[in-house]
Image 1: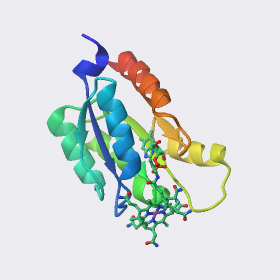
Image 2 (image 1 turned 120 degrees about the horizontal axis):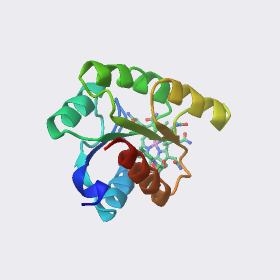
Image 3 (image 1 turned 180 degrees about the vertical axis):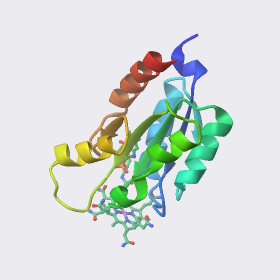
Image 4 (image 1 turned 120 degrees about the vertical axis):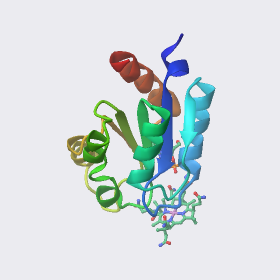
Length: 141
Ligand code: B12
């Protein structure tokens, strides 16, 4: 059985963020690629992401953040995952992650240090994400 048929993927837009279009595109791409998607929608708290991942035994959480407040909204998710027993869960983050003009490399490094496995700019193509996710899941499961 292909890895995407076995593993569930939780998706949503984090915190008070109401932007829904980007994560919908990603969810469609995931479904088209054969993944089981657990879509939590907009304004998803860190706790909701974790609860859904625990309940569904998910292998990855894909977090969207568009409002520019990703640093505040996304910090601490990895630690909460570990506390909930999701030590190895794959965390991806994408969207418009900052309101400033920090260079992409700096932003990416900051979120990697927070424990996200991969961090994507708004220009990422869904095909790239699917390729990375299949490879990362295959390594862990
Ligand atoms: C449409 C829109 C809205 C709509 C949202 C409607 C909806 N149902 O989604 C409305 C009008 C409601 C809105 C509101 C606001 N918005 Co607005 N919005 C936009 C806009 C114009 C387009 C976003 C969009 O839908 N793009 C199309 C989708 C398909 O692309 P995408 O979202 O970028 O997603 C792609 C990638 O980012 C990536 N991706 C996204 N998520 C993820 C997750 C993962 C894991 C991965 C791998 C990839 C990934 O893949 C997606 C598909 O290719 C952008 C500007 C822009 N051009 O991006 C501003 C923008 C995002 N909004 C902005 C702001 C500030 C707001 C408000 C705070 C404004 C206000 N003061 O009220 C509020 C939000 C309030 C809140 N609580 O969240 C700012 C964010 C600031 C920043 N980050 O620099 C932007 C960038 C505009 C700007 N230039 O200032 N907005």
